Length: 143
Image 1 (tube, helix red, strand yellow):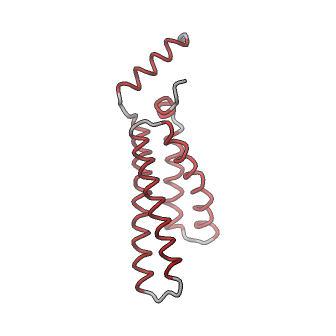
Image 2 (cartoon, rainbow, N blue to C red):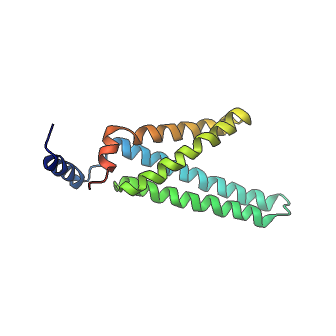
Image 3 (cartoon, rainbow, N blue to C red):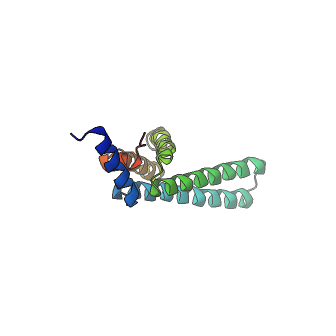
């Protein structure tokens, strides 16, 4: 086991190389794909809001705004992961943990596995990738 100062120096050297571990890069790619899916969903909702006669257009547009805001936040988190910012890991983990019960509800209770399957797979894959030793080492804060 290395003494503490050498461990810190080793981690600083690894961080200075700027090499993004493949697990973190893959997790960032999945998060960016989720953001793209939210943008596509928002566009579909806009079209549906104007094509169908809706008595609550404001509600549909509010949902679209929320989806676009969530997509922007996910893109910022994906960028943060690629820059190895430790503060971007927590929001990503929280979003993925929230996606698990939503995916379960969509797939098991509502029978919409076409939507739930990719959602659950992306959430589980992202959580698994961010839990790997290389991702944890790259994203841990040095105190």
